[in-house]
Image (cartoon, rainbow, N blue to C red; front, side, top):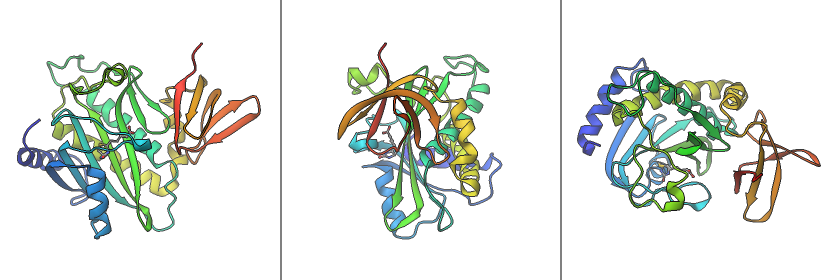
Length: 276
Ligand code: BTN
């Protein structure tokens, strides 16, 4: 990955080539920060505008869902956060799932025009799928994670953090390496980011107009566990087993159990395919 200054100018050039309203995004590339989400939450509290993007070549304390770390060596993953201010009263339910739809659209379009020399031939469609609530999988392994956080006191302003593996860090523990994937198309980081932002802008506009409900069937068409047996692990309660019946219009997971269909909110739950 190029240094921060080169990346900054590459990203500006890549954004100019896309069909985007001028000034929609203001991108700030940092050589290092603790967490792009934390940095952007601070900027948001001091009035940063919608469309502000913080990108870090390296995060020293990248954060994931459920208090986990996002592990990456400098340049190994694309790590960035986007601030989006919705109209007051907009419900953020299902926003991290909507972001997953944008990731699939963006990466599918990049795969279709992959550069010569990529590990995977141009046009070969990658096996991308979505795992509720916030993971993007490639060949059933985690390629990217999404961490959506609301700006304190401003429930309609969201910081959308995305980490996407370009290569797997040496320091990644073996048990995580087995279930992790890296983007195999050799896309330049600036093109990767500009394409993701283009599709995020489109999806966030749809979300602003109709909530997650308008993206629900597209999300389900990429759902990794649709109609499959799963276990839901919860730190505070016994595991629950059932058949995954997709998601509700507000993004809740629909789990069919012997007691009927249960709605599961993202909270502290982790989903695993059930063992046969
Ligand atoms: C998860 O898989 O639990 C979510 C991972 C989200 C990681 C990204 S990297 C950019 C942004 N900044 C952070 O500290 N976290 C998110």
